[in-house]
Length: 250
Image (cartoon, rainbow, N blue to C red):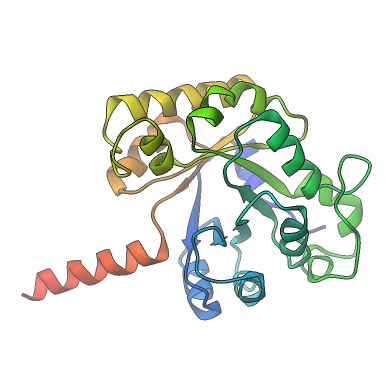
């Protein structure tokens, strides 16, 4: 089966960087994936597109060395199965608040006997290789999003769910839950919570990733010991670079 390079980077204790595509366009996904990222995440939670649009985006990412990841719209076996069948090599699942939520997510990503993923002809077999079924359970990456007060309080129990690979921190929603602004990336309260989550993940030998809303935050998250950092979305980067060029020419 095709290697999941994120697992290799994590094992080597090297920081992985993921692009983030929230516009439902396969050419844009291909452009982002050619930018040098270790992975590219197709965002179905806040991206304004469906599974049908995600499939050509995953195909476009697969023409590059970037690992194709998805953020599903919800903890749904049906949607997660389709995205894995489409060739996603890892799933970030939003709003995991309890160990039971995490267990349901893990089961959706694994074939029996560990899980309840259904078997059928799919693009994942073409991308992963003829021995996909044999190795998929050990290759597909599962990251549970911690982004609520409840999820934060239950983080240690979530991290102890067998075969969950790690957590992915949603800092904006976590900040909102803490009574802060969604872009309060510099506040001590939020950063203390992030440090706690990193320490818990490392304690249990699990991976930890985060979305970074600014470059200052991305650098700080690297210093915190993150395994995976997303340095902004496609929309944010297009707007920022456009503003930079306009300002330079004005």
